[in-house]
Length: 264
Image (tube, rainbow, N blue to C red; front, side, top):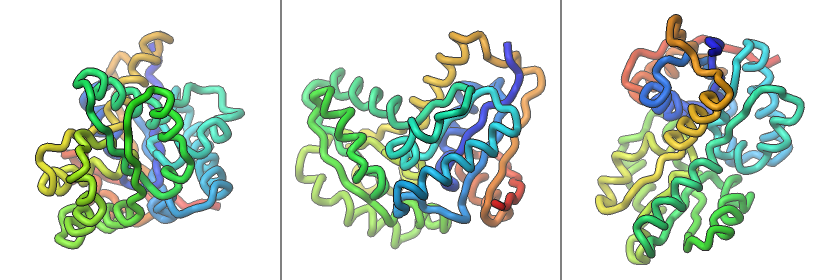
């Protein structure tokens, strides 16, 4: 048993989809969340910058004595995961590998499903999804959607403009037999409603659920699950704390009160 909190980090609001999954699959666990909304999005940053930011976020959580970390940022997970976790002696889980496993499992279960993957520009350009899915033999298509994260961070998830952008990104796939869509950024499940409005038949794969299930499996294996006696939830953001709280509340379904942090 280990009642220390789990750390969750992201470039901004997207990792709150991981928190939502934790409330479902790990309700007895405390957590400390840090979202770097001030510097979001990460998807347009170069690799060195992504690595620097990732280490800063991970260091922030380690100083708070978390027992494990979920890197909820797909851009960090796909570009610099091995480098960013080097030197840290706590279990660290990324979102991409569990998400890809879920996508492969779905496609194998249903047969000849064609998988679409949408993610940030840096994630698609990293080739990491292509590598993992290519090794599985799953037929997949890939697309960078750089406008989606800024729209989520701006609180425009259900805005008419966002719906038009989603249509522009996905309309060509609608005629190419893409049956399932892997949301390769944790911000994207926040757009599930407008995506489904555009394409009702599409099966959406949320990486957040898979990452939390993997975290639960790992903690159970190491006998590090909490007994649920003192569950604490702490939210931190480098952006506007009031705005983060307002948008975060709409994402996870219960009140979010965030603390403003500043990078040195």
